[in-house]
Length: 632
Image (cartoon, rainbow, N blue to C red):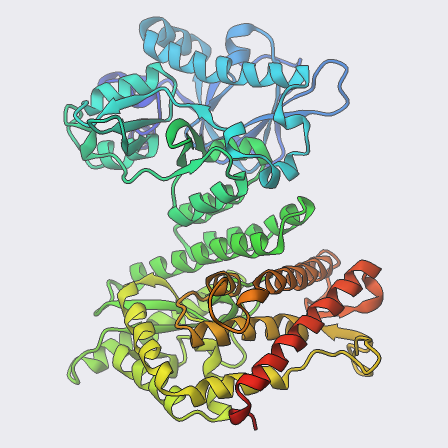
């Protein structure tokens, strides 16, 4: 059974996947296994040489080099599942790098004697391993020592300052759509590429085929390897210009769930950048946490990974990242955790009886969560007959309770106000949700509007998104006919005036637990969110996030079209203050809150905060004039 499992594993790993089945099985019988706990130094620079080629089954290792006369080790590479290490030591008789397990790591060990036999009998495998281990990373190490490499700068900062063109690999494997899968694999191995670009009749890129595609679409699916590569390629090709910052590419890879992005220069393909390139660049990128999340198959395995993923915030803060970039990364990671719990729930209870869509609400819906707070979610499902209703209701009752408890296990606290899909009120068919929104909009009261605001920031996160789109279309059609609803929104905005005193000072709490503190969320973040929401709904803008709403309002005809730059800066600034404050509390083991002391701010920060408050007051005065007939 162990042999079969290992054969299946290596059958998906280059270059072993290209061995014929009998030879692969014979090779597997010569393997042993080793476990390296996190932090173990597996091989030490200038230490004992390796007598095995190690193939990573689970976990990962970091490879560092200390240049002659250098005081610190330099990160050369990270290796992960399916990759190998120890070849340079095995062949050269000298251990030139230090290799450390960055997490609990299990490896298959191919002994030196068997390795030498394989190298002698299979030149293609020899070439692949040599090129992968020696050429790529020897060049990198050489540049490092000579002081010409990107990595001599702060690698923490590079993710946000380097352009992707500085990082991309030259793309050499280009095939036509009718090239066979076998020929494409041979070309990729010969040219040492982890992907092949597929082009159309005029040389235009129409698809890409990656190592992952080979595993899932060829090997696992049993596709004949003499068929055309167009049958298994991914398309369309996701591409970015070479001048795009690396961060934007990381975010695109997270959003599109891909590991390769084509890099262009003036529209022409210049190269490709991969997940591994960012691991090398940054050490531990958001993509790595995303991959950890995707690999989990149980709640017990997902929970610690989910909680650990939040450590990325500290890295991003040390890089000097923009607050809006930080919350976008956090949101992408949070979304993956929620989707994974949803997948586990569907596996637990079976396929849903009708199409449904999971909705993220509030700050989660706007992709503006800082540190994980409480859950805000809902569920909409397709309308059913009265006869079906009991069975469907019972399925989603159990389903949503599982979600609530699973998300708590993963670090998302239950919502104290019970704005969760596990509340039967917020798990309803589409027709009932339409009735909710119709009532909120056509019969607005202060209580109803306050209650409904969290739902107007909804975002489809998983399932049949057409249900969410139909719901959004529904209330979008209603809003123009009921200006009183927008008047109530304006009322709520005006009631939360910034804490600017008569003499221009900032008012703080005078007593209580948070004496001398200022609630950034309520007094600074919330008014900016409310401003963007009010004018987005007024103009029929579909975006949910504050920054996206402001961008959509730029250059338009709303009251704030000319203030977009100032509003975006204010939102960026107060969000960054909030994230830094909460991270310091987390590091100190304190409860996380939104109260910041003015005496903890620099003079520039205090002046910027006052400027943000004055901007909010300016907009509120304009709103008062526009909606004065509705103001209570």
